Amino acid sequence: MSLMRFAGTGLIRSRLRLCLFTGLVCTALASTAALPPVNQPPSLHESFASRFAIGFGTEVTSGARMDLVHRHASIVTCENSLKPGALRAEPDVWNWEKADAWLAWTESLGKTPIGHTLVWGYMQPKWLLERIAAGKMDATSVLRWQDDHIRTVLARYGERIRIWDVVNEALADGPDDAYLRNDPWANLCGEAYVIEAFRSARAAAPRAHLRYNDYNLEQPAKRARLLRLLKQLEAAGCRPDSVGIQGHWTLKGPPASEVEAAIIEINAAGYSVDFTEIDVSIYAWIAGANLQEPRNETATPPGYQTLPDELQAQLTERYREVFRVFVKHADKIGRVTFWNVDDGSTWLNVWPVRGRPNHPLLFDRQQQPKPAFWAVLGEAETCLPTTTR
Ligand code: GLA
Picture (tube, rainbow, N blue to C red):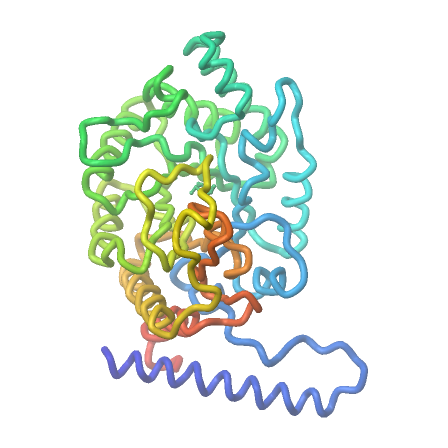
């Protein structure tokens, strides 16, 4: 196996050398005619095409960042503009402009768009959460609002966006007995909101691929809650098409063995798995960090402006080990999406500590591939049938 991997890496290197050589020759021969860039590393999505789709979660980008999306992704998830808080920042007003622009951009690149997310109880529009907190809405009116929201979004985009995260992050974390996350939506409606969300989405877009999406599903306690939720959804006739594991990980965890256990167990329950928001923070998680409240940089040590070699090596190994698991279980995985494109655009530069540089992705701030990129690509190569090497 290790010999095969070595052979695969060698193949990548020789391909790259060929690309560079071809690039030099073409540059020498070309006059002013525009040639496609030939001195590029292999495309991630093409390299994994026989196993699973590869994508990025991003808003509209341009320049070198857009080139990365174009080259390495076949799917693109809308990072923010389709969230309820973005579409409906104010009562009775729909803000479609950014979502329209994102969809047009994604289509113009020839990529498959993924809608994210129809419902996110923890991050619903602020004004709506305030109304609920003030006791002005009961469960019935919340569910009516949600149904109207889902049907309106799918009426506009359902024909063009065929893959949707229907509900994001409904489940509780931690080892205690809580089932659902402590958020206003769940506290008012219980699991009925998840069931009704899938019912509404299925009715409005019968042919769409509908996902349940959450984080920490590698942890057995949270996964047990997921399996309970899936059973409830099945019993209600509202089965999702797949489960999304976000994959916001760190250098330290979760262990690849837990990622593997999650894939196997969710698949055994009858669901394929998508990894929907992968990144690997080089810092440890801060307990109790809250998405709505990033801390200021001064609150902690300032972090690394550039990635020290030792952490670069750890990042590379981390990506290698999880992609080895992905490739091993490729028959159970539909899509793998990185959350943001390169280290310059990652949300982890502003959360959980505002202004602390992070380096969690395969491409650096100059949009150049990092060693982790080559490690990931090496995993694609290891399993090519010998005849195609
Ligand atoms: C969660 C959400 C994403 C995004 C990230 C932070 O994982 O699902 O949409 O907001 O947090 O960027």
